[in-house]
Image 1 (cartoon, rainbow, N blue to C red):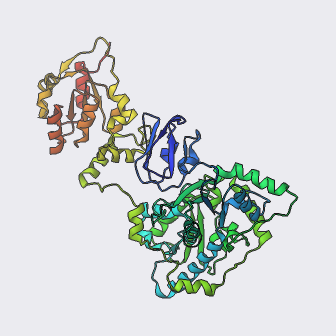
Image 2 (tube, rainbow, N blue to C red):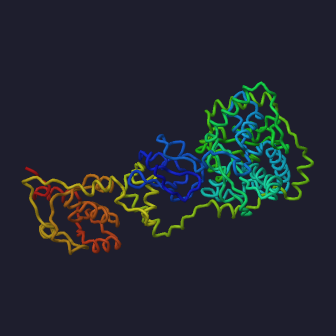
Image 3 (tube, helix red, strand yellow):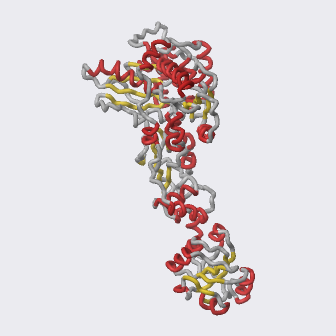
Length: 558
């Protein structure tokens, strides 16, 4: 297997499996993926860890950059931080049996997220209640739970960062609790500790938030649910088939799952289902999330207090690293909620005391989040923007991705940044290298012959007057000219901008005749002089001159 190293820590690509279909390139919402030589894929921009490239690759060449499953706890203390999505992967199995299965796999502690979901619930409700009076944050507030959404906002909608709820998300609360209460116990005895984030998507393990205290004794590792599912399934089956009453000792309350709230969080709408306010909204799916963020940016939904966004359809149940179908998982969640019911095991008063002390407030300001996850590209100059527009006139605009960029405009931007060449466009490359076979019987002459014969005025490129004229062509649509104009032709057009010279060079034309009394601009003339492409002026219509050229033998065949 040949892997290609990427700047992204969320996904990696396997060249040996890649078919070159470019599905991943087109699917990336931040247009961060490029392909070279139809196989070599690399991340050149900001990856937000959405996993869409994994989802759309039918060859299996894209995978999450998660650790491989191994013998947990053999030479270290393994602590599992469990996403509630894991429970939904085992329809008909009690959460306690799933957690016990993890412990039999070698995990010393299995931390259930439901405890911290309740804390997040209370903190969110309190912030919203206070914000109704203070208007400290703009409406609607946006859930910080999905890291992809936060990164997407920082990258594409930075003006919306103040809308993101400034409360630590449940996974961060869970990790902090483990680091403060469990890990010190083992560090005193010199044992090595590893935190395993068991996740339904590649983004839950945030490298920018990982181990901020730089404690060498702690390793933080991301595992996909699908990575541990086979072994965990075997352990769960052993527990189900055993006649003995299961005995399991846990030291902390958050090592058990006692309500259906956690399972609810796995699906879209579960976060807001039990919150104590009415004006809320749940949106799932990457395209839908982007569409609604655009609407918020336009000033809509100000009457909504809180929006739960999940970039995966049906919420985290639809994560690319989940093990079973999202609709089967959703059915399992609904049955689990019916069995367990909804309730809270923490009291509001205790949580509010911690809230007053700022215990749940995130340390990352909107500006810091933009710095971490915003675009890393340098701003383009006005000249570069103009170059992009001129390049777009040369391209067909089909967004085929054959050049290795997701669309024509991104390709034009790559050219402006100096990371791509116009010849990377297969359509332009093919048409600029085809040699037109000449047929016998055509009259040949030089550009100078035409100038003298028809009294044409030379305004640029007089060093190329000795070019051989082998054909003629009329037209003004640049993409059509690129596809059909023969090499060695004299081109009749009313266009006068700089791109006509670029087209003439690419098509290896003999000369450009600007008709209808039009005059090219100074930049065009300067470019023509540099390239040695003659530009001549004709005061009347192209129709009249074309007829005369044809009668003279230009373009005729026997």
